[in-house]
Length: 120
Image (cartoon, rainbow, N blue to C red; front, side, top):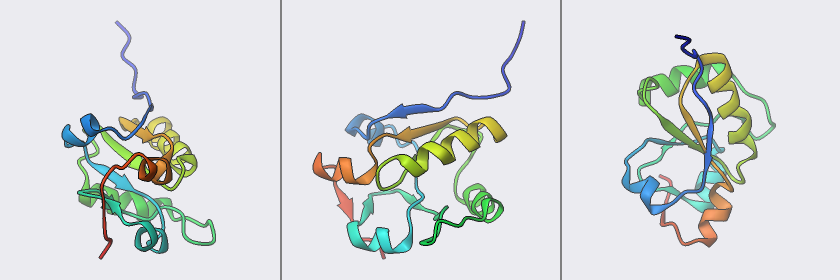
């Protein structure tokens, strides 16, 4: 019997069913983006890329592991789904996390009337 060390990244839209599942949703956008659009209620804002496109993977992972049980599935959301695709693949292939990339990001789902709350 062969067991895979790596999980598979799932790509899925943000649906009411996903929200109802209570899977943790990590919003990896910048603070400015959180303020501009708001965030998905109950999501966990942890910036991955800063405004200049730089990142500190170790700092992100430290914050992620403080706020999310990474042994269980969780989801990532960004503005359009581009950044989460990259980060999801990194978390899956390098660390074996079970990640759902929310396709289309916050902008797509904002048009679909997923309720957003103000970022504080």
